[in-house]
Structure formats: structure tokens, C-alpha cells
Image (cartoon, rainbow, N blue to C red; front, side):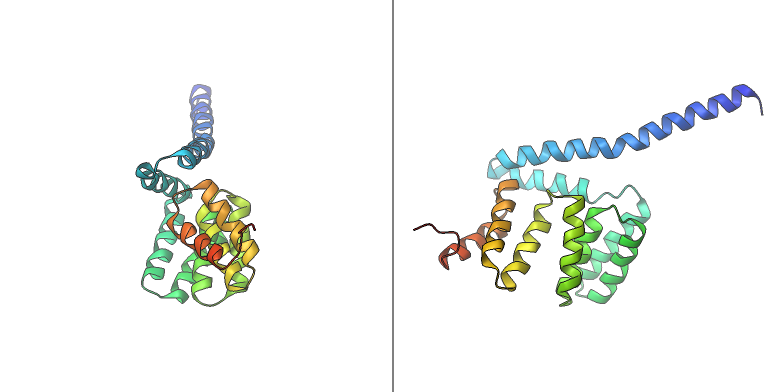
Length: 185
């Protein structure tokens, strides 16, 4: 191999590395921009912004990991929690830095009645993506089930700070207020 060929391969490899390493940063920048827009958006725009955020958060950077996420969610839709947990466990094993894998598996554990593992997975998901208002909502639901209404209300309030049009959080906070949680006298 000639020196020109080696240098060209090195340059191509370096450019590819720069591109690949910059994509997550660009996605993160776009997610931050969308979150800012969502927090200020009229209701008519909220659905579109939510879908755009989901598309970003659902991308692991690996087609095979994205396939495991898709299969796990399909199993959840079919109420097959065991199969969902299997797919999503494979995902979290192979992509431990992918927040949405932890969030999806937390949902599967929760639906299977395995609250301890569900809470741990939510903790991991939120450590990786503290702005995931759907994971925060899930945490609020679990806190409410445990009887910790004050912290559940705080979680739902945080969801509404990030996404003021999150219907489930709006409903949950209204229910808590009717019960006297979060009301001032």
C-alpha cells in the first residue's frame, strides 16, 4: 500500500469519526431546541413537537438497538410483558447509555407489577435524559400509587414545565388538587 493510500484512508477515517461523533451532539442540540419550543408552544403545535422529540429520543444510533426497542414496544402493545422485558433487557445490556431503552423497560416492568426494577430503570433513564417528561410522568404515577402524593405532584408539575400540554399530567395534577394536594389555603 502506498503512503498516499494510507494517508487518504486516515483522512477518510478521521472525517467519518468527526461526523459520527457530531451526530449525537446535533441531535441533542435539536432536542434542547424542541424542548424550549414545546415549553412555550400553543396547544396546536404541541403534538408535532412531542413527535419530533420522540423521534430523536427513540434513536439509539444503532439499527439493531432501534429494532430491539421497536420489538419491545410491539410486545408491550400485545400485553406480552415477559417478551417486552426480554427484548428491552437485551437493549439495555448492549446500549446502556440509551435512555429510552431504560424508560421502555421501566414501562414493561411496571406493567408486569415489578415496581422495584421499574423504579431503578426510571432512575437510569432520567440520569441519562432528565428532560424526558414521559419518564417523569411514569415516576409520578408510581409515586402516587405508593401514596407519596406530594412527590407525585412535584413530578407532574415538572412534566408540565417541560410540556405544558401533556394531557395525562394535567389530569393527574387536577385529581391531586381535588384531593387537596398542592392547594394553598
